[in-house]
Length: 426
Image (cartoon, rainbow, N blue to C red; front, side):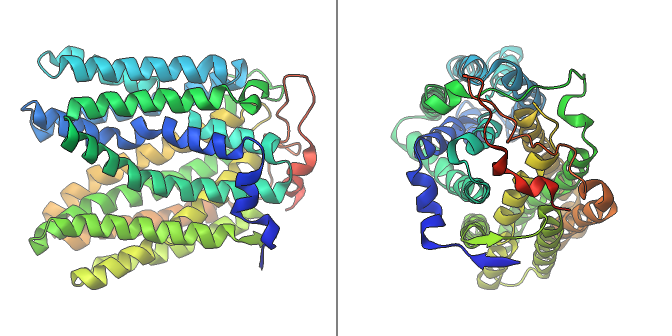
């Protein structure tokens, strides 16, 4: 059930909270290298005379190393604190990409090593921000609205980021774009780790266990579902390229992706404007079902105008699904593993998107563009089936105290547990 949020409880209330705007902006800027990496690397490789195959190989190496590094660095943040991990990681990642930009593709082994370093040490700023929200905002309803704002801001970043890369390439060169974007990434990370909440944040005490956050059955269930949500989204990007090729108008691809982003932005704003009651696990099942249903009409592949409208529809429930998933992660992450848990969500989603792109390509070649979009619909449906099949596991959060609620300030004071009263709502 949803009710309208009072005027004082909207997004402006979140941004007016001390440190909130700085943390959100710093995190978004700090994530620019990762968010724009594929397009920047592709433009750079092509400018160097390399093939699309080489660009794809380097991007894959970057993506795989990033998927490995995120949960490992997230665990390090939980153990050592944010400044001691986030900033050194950001610097190492930027140095790896700078090496790639300065040496080019003349020595392939060096190029691959450089992008692996850049991916492996990408700082887990996304998970770090979500771990900070409870200590910055206090009340549960404000934290949940911040998760929705976070999901909306991601859509803005993934729209503005590629435009910034394109502008830098036009003004200077692809190599300059790589260097500037990564310098901005370090500055964004610096803005976050120098803030008082980041310096003061400490993870809750944790049980020593080699599985870390992955020992939570509820978190594993959520990750299993979100792998297929990522697969669906990744397949859409490939299918949209095929659709544009079919129409003989490359610019159609840009319109479809912009429409998808607009839908997600709209859905996120509307979702965050309401106060939701009831267990978020049940709400997540409804949202994923709606997401899957909205993916299915894409297989009709109508004319560009109608297809753009369907793309808007397909994106409407993406940001709400992400925002609700953030709450579920916080409820199920074992004490002291909140950053690692959020990082696992990022990794799982990214790996799913990569596989979706890989599956959609052969599907398009074998059965046409509609088959590529069918992969997206199938991914959404399987994501829903996973949530339905694991309903009992998800119904009982593993950590009554809450991952976010158990975070501590440097002075030893715990963040009020009132932040997460939903922990005991079944």
